[in-house]
Image (cartoon, rainbow, N blue to C red; front, side, top):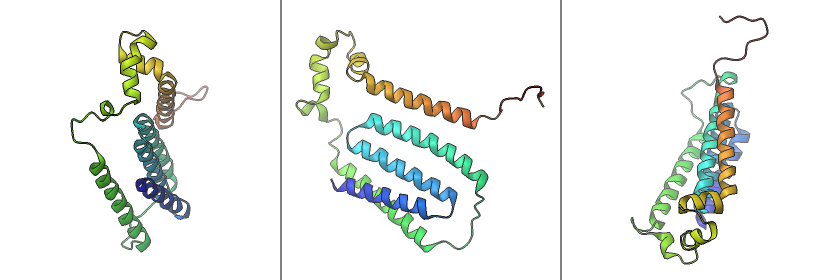
Length: 183
């Protein structure tokens, strides 16, 4: 449970920095850190499919925001670094490192089927009752199309929409105006 508090604190600090910073690119990067924290929260809540969707949408959103930001915000690297920024960066790296150490300590031994040992888990229900409830010949299809159909549809819609939006915004050629010729 402490990992949730650490991630929440990480996202809170990133949100404060995103609001308070004067640099647009730094603000966009902090928003990306918030999205990364949200995806880690989903992962700890045992929703890896939603975590993957969050990461994909976050990456595409960051690409779009960075492209829009770089055109407006010219950032120059100077010899002076803000002390607060360095301290916050070190703390964020330390928190991510400690979260990784905590994750590796709590993982079961490699090759141990954790869902097979948990009675009443969703995977046990899918395996034991999947063929009778769905009539499908393939248990994977039964899980994706019957038990988790709305979830799969939602994730597919989110991924398709974000990829379509990134393609539209990042395309090189724009539409020609009426009567305009190719250059």
